[in-house]
Length: 79
Image (cartoon, rainbow, N blue to C red):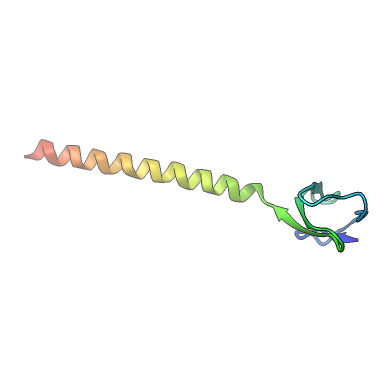
C-alpha cells in the first residue's frame, strides 16, 4: 500500500503490476505520482505548480530585459 505524498490517502498499488516510471493518480486529491521504486513501491508527487512557476519566472525574466532595454534607449535620447 502506498500513501499519497500530498494528502496521505492510501493508494492501492500491486507491486507485481506497477513499473518504475509509471504515473499514478491519487483517487482523493488527484495528485499525480511517479513510481520511483518497486519492491517496495515508492512514489514522488509530480507537481504541475512547479512547472507553471518556472514558466512564470522565465516570462518575468524576459520582461525585465525589455524594461532594461527601454531604459538604455531613454538614456540615449537624453544625450
